[in-house]
Every structure is written in structure tokens, then in C-alpha cells.
Image 1 (cartoon, one colour):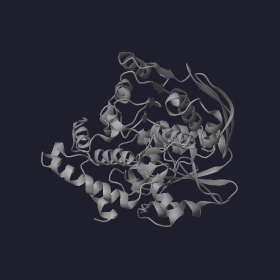
Image 2 (cartoon, helix red, strand yellow):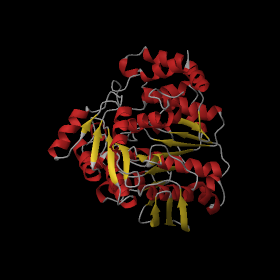
Image 3 (cartoon, one colour):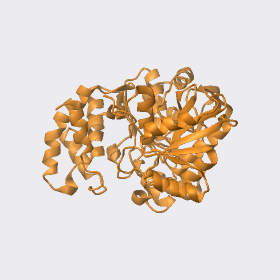
Image 4 (cartoon, helix red, strand yellow):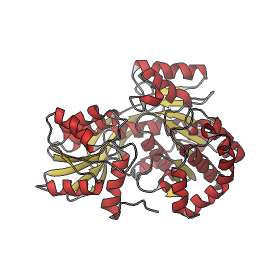
Length: 441
């Protein structure tokens, strides 16, 4: 099979037809010889920021001289973004090779019935672990796909550190109808005797995490209690902060990532490095961390797609993420007139997200990415109409971007922000960077 045929097959795997649980992924990995058990793993969950923390830690560890496997979800342009070794995307040939190894095992499981079929995410999780093992990765930095407790990545038995960035509303139809219930799912990645770094500060959610950490005798390192930060400069591409850690005090750290939320994410990553340094390097190397933090690039997160005119893409896809984006844009670009391109998935807090977008933007172009969960632009329009906010509907993301560009009046004063979904951002990136709407190889 070709790479394109394999990817099409993977996307055809069941999504909502499987029951929550680890039985399928455990069986599939057992057939592979449990490659995950041969890896040193950093495991990262949370409502927002887990992809950024995965990227930051991967860069630090690479600069430590380690061979690092990184697992992300979702992707923006190509499926291969999800699995990286030393930040290099796996090749199309590796995807095909792993598929050919996995397909007999998958077909055996498929024969057991609909609920026994490994899902898309379970298959690619197994693929990632096996590729990291085959490539002799010294460390694997693994981002949770959804929740934690029943996520396919939660087959990791003995992580170097478990990280929970924060807990807020998202996927409540699956994870729970209250924030403590969602916290229970995220806290599911805490393992016996393994340290935990946690950025959550709200009492109702933190109590759930503290209870599980105590039950499993896991050392809990908490934001605001054990580590903190203060921002000293926040200008686009010029970001400085001070880190106050468990044992480390680091002043005037320069980070390449933009957005107020990235100071928080970076602090979590540094706290995790304080925990794991004895395992991956000795001692804690401030100079290497400083250098690594100036090099991190993370696509689709406060990313500049064009400089003139200024076009920013941010994959804020839930209410907490949109709230952070709103405050970041107001802080960094207080005098800019913002034109937005917005596409949102239908299972999100559409009203809450659009309220922030409405307050942020002078004009909004509504669209929809080519994804089965995308909300119709007309549905978004009904909400904006109730806010008495003017908007336009343009159904294709590339056309919506073109329409926003045509609305610009002054390149020095105006800017475009593309947001609402990583899928919307991904299609905009394909169009503006590669001038295409199809998946890159």
C-alpha cells in the first residue's frame, strides 16, 4: 500500500464505536512485545498546554544530547506530525512499514467484534511506541490524546514524571459533567510512586489530584506552592520571565514561544526537568535549558503565518484556550484592529468562545474546516447575531482567509487572527504556507 492509502485506512478505524478502556491497546501492544515497557517516558495530560509542554520538554532533552521520541495529537498538516524522533517527522516509508507490521494483528482483533476493534488513536499509539523502540529512543515524551485514565497512552506503567497542566471544561460528554469528574480522568495518569508535576490551582480539582497522588504514594509538585514564575517582558518574539523552582532560581529566561500561557507551560516543563534531571542528566543544566527555550517552535500556537500583513494563527479550541488567546492579543497588540477567521467544532462551548472572539475582533469571517465535527458557519452566525455582532460567512477556510485579507485597510494598524479549532488553523496554514488544501506528505 502507498502512504496515502495507509493514512486513509487509519482514518477509517472506529472512533465512537469503541468502549472506554485499555483492553484493546493493551492486547495490541502485547502482540508487539510491549515496546512501551522498554522506554523511559514523560507522560503529559491536561485540558490545555499539554502539546506545548511536550514540545518544550522534547527540545530541552534533545539539547541534553538525548534521542527523543515525541507523540502529539492532533496534527495540523500531515499525519506524520504526530510521531517525531528528535523533532523529525517519521517518514512516509516508516508509516507504511509499521502499518504492514500491525495490520495482521489488527485484523485478528477486528474478528472479535465491533467493540474489540482497535480505534484510530489506539493504532497510532501502538505505532508510536514501536517506532520509538525500534529507533532506540532514550526518552519518549507522550501527550495524552483525551482525558487520561482511559486514554490509549495510559499503558505507561512507570513514567519518569506525570504532568497535569490544568483542568477545565472540554469533552465533558466523555470526561464528565463536573470539573472534579474531569479531574478524575486527568489524574488517571498518576502511577504508583511516580512523581507528578501539576499546574492546577483550583481547590475542587486539586483535591482530586492530591487524593490520587496520596493513594499512589506519588510526590506531588504544585504550581504556586513548589514552583512559580513572573513575567518581566511580553512583546511579540521578545518574551522574558523569571522562574522560581523547587531548587532552582533562574532569572531573565528568554522563550521563543509567544502567548501569555507559554510562560506557564514553560515553567511546568522546567519543574519537570528539575524532577527528572537525575534520571536523564546530572546535574540540572541551566545553560542548556536557557538555550533550548530560545529554539522551540510550535506550529499553530500564536504562530506568525505572515508578517506583512500580520497574520497570527492560534489553535485555541475550547473556552479556556480562547480566554487565554483573548488576553494575549489584548496584551501584545493593544492598538491593533483585529479581523478574525473563525471555525469551531460543534461539540465545543460555541457561545462562550464566540463571546471572547466577538469582544476581540472588529470583524469576523465565519467558516468551517473539512472535518466531520465542524459546526456549520450559519450556527455560529446565529450566536453572533444574538450578540449584535456583524459577521460574514465564507464556507471554505482558504476563501475565508482571502476574504479576511481583503478587509485589511492599514497593514500597520490591522491584523488577522485565525482561531477556533486546530483543524481550522491547519487548513489556513496549508493554504498560506504551502498554497494547497490537501494533506502534505
